[in-house]
Image 1 (cartoon, rainbow, N blue to C red):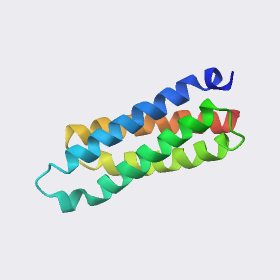
Image 2: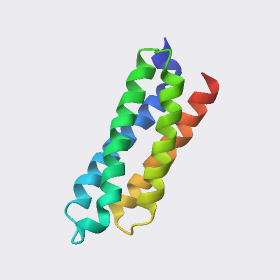
Image 3: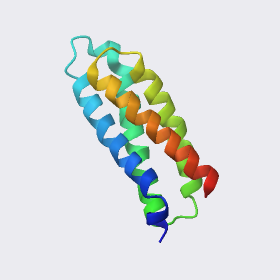
Length: 111
């Protein structure tokens, strides 16, 4: 089954989506929310593409490889932005994004 073949990537996508949701919500509670605007926007984009990529892999879509490549690019951008901020939630999100980007690149090159 295709979803078993991509289990580690699917798991990384769901973990990243959860980390991004948490980060966006936490950023909204920071004192200078305007400074966090790009982080919040990327968190939302990243969470959505991660869930979509996981869904495409789970059902064995012929477009899973392309979606995972895009997911890797968005995760990289989100992780790079989060890494710029000192907040714990941003640092945790950056780690989740990096892991997901690596898993998605691996999946896209192997599929």
